[in-house]
Structures are given as C-alpha cells and as structure tokens.
Length: 276
Image (cartoon, rainbow, N blue to C red):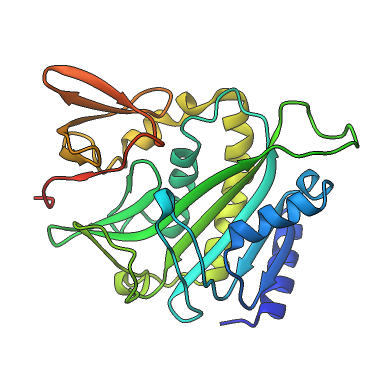
C-alpha cells in the first residue's frame, strides 16, 4: 500500500488528469474522516466551497448509521469521506444513489454478486448467506459564511464510505450479515482504484441528484435491491414484506395488508431469513 504522502500525490494527479477539481488530503490516522471534514468545514467557512476527498489509512472512531462504529486498520479497510456543497430538490434517496456508484466501483464487471441493502450498505449474496462489504454514512451541515459565494439553501454534505478489503474481526456485522472483504471475493482492485472510481462517478451523479432527485436513479437501484420481495424485520419490533422503494427512496413495507412508507431515520431493517 502507498504511504499517505504518496497516495495523496497519486490521487491528486489522477483526479486532475480527469478534470475533476477535488482537493485531496490523506492522513495516516484520524478518529473519523467524516468527523474531520465536518471539523474543518466549521472552522473555515471557505472550505465548503471546494469539494474535498479526505482519506485515512487508519480510522479509530469511525461512525456508522444509528450510532454503530466502523473502526478500520491499514491492512484491512479503506475509509474516506467526500465533502461538498449540495442543493438538491430533496435529500431523500441520496445514500441509495451513492450506493449505486459505490457498488459499480467495487464490481465493475458485475461478477461479485453485490447488492444494496437499504439504506446504506453494500452486501454480498454468497453460498446462501449475506455478507457486508461496505457502508455509507451521510451527514450535512449548514455553512456559516459571509462571502455570499454559497447558495442560500445549500448545505455542506459529507459522504463517508468504509470498505472492507479483508474481513475484519470487528463489530461491523448484523445478525444475518458477517463482514467480508474484497480480497475474499478475489477482487484485484486497489484502494486508489476504488477512490478514483467513486469520486469520478459521484462527480456526475451528485449533479444529477441535485436536479432530478432519486426518481432518476430508481430503476438502477431496483436492479440491485437486496431486500425487495423479502420478508424483513424492523427495529421497532415489527415484520413485513419489502416491496422495494418509492420514487423518493423510501422503503415500502407490506404490513397487515397495508403499505407502510419508511424513511431512513425511522428504523433499521434486515432480512428475516438467509437467501435461498
């Protein structure tokens, strides 16, 4: 693996050659790449004006959705965050759009059996089991700036991504999804390959999301939806049949002959059974 200094130089050069105006910073270690980007944005009101990629070779206090932790090591994981200003017509479904690009970046040939588990995980279906390969965490912050350069309704959005390269002995699993790494799947991708692919794809996707919303991406999500047509358990103690997602990215669950609409902050969900 490249050192932090060499990885930063490599990523900066490659992104510049693609015509992508992202600032790049690579750290040896940090508590959380998303936390650090938020800190920087709050300390310097000009930072949100420039899109930035922050990578850390080691993350000691990484955060997942609903307070779960995502700790990473140099050997096993890739953790990075993207920070930029966004002003979408609706924020609903953003994590699903990011997930589509992350899945395609991790599996360009679509040969690894990757699927998206609403609202923010990349899962693998293998040998009649679910495995978790990657996760996404999205946070926003309202910039406080007197420069008048920031659109009045724009927010600073931080997209945190964690990818397993080797299956870690960490508390990142759900009752039905143990962690798995790219190396376990025989993938030849390097960390820099993944970062470059994700940033390249999201540079286009995020602009489309701002103007079109999730509806523009719904068909693509439906093709890799891990929960659709499965019986699922919800963290509020109820169960139901997943019918997929709405055009806004909400989860649709059939319960007692009625369709319940769920947004990501409401509850977490998981399949009731292993695939098969």
